[in-house]
Length: 214
Image 1 (cartoon, one colour):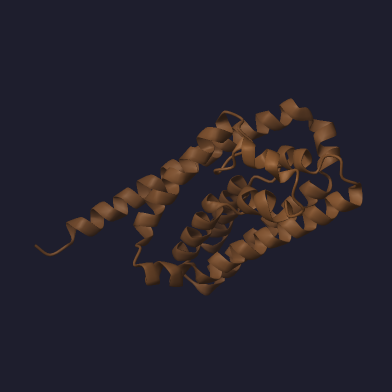
Image 2 (image 1 turned 60 degrees about the vertical axis):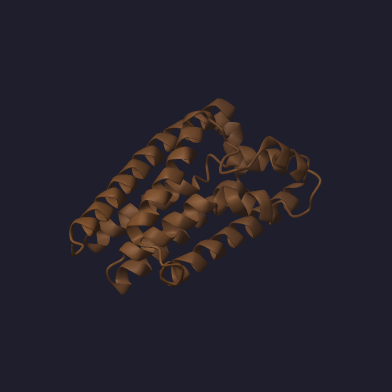
């Protein structure tokens, strides 16, 4: 895969999975009643933390797989199945996804660290995002592609930052129904990405078994 194709693939994959626009509804719900300054502080802290988490796994993903003895194809299958469940929730317009229950959302109103949980993790940097970051790192063939992956993450979380900072304006312009439509659309794209990831992983596992010595 050439550098341009790798960057486009990495950016689209990360952007669809992070899906900052569809996370606006949860963000607005959790920051309802706060002043604009307080909301912006939470937005900056949560996006920054999510970016740091993603960068950590981009830089250490290969080491983690080696230590745990997990093959890239196995991770693709597991990650693809995880993404498929997330995509299924998104296509049903379930904003509180990736193991966030309504009870946990309600409990967040009473805490001061909502920028950590659930906004930074798992909304912006959940298991699906972490798994995808590791897979994209593993598929980078040269250092230049890894740098492009970092650039894709920077752009993705920059968009997330702007989206959260102007969340109330975006919500006012698009409306609740408009955001639900985007959520379903992103879910469809994410479903396609997950199926492709699963197919690639299954094929890789099959090929590895066929070349094993008898």
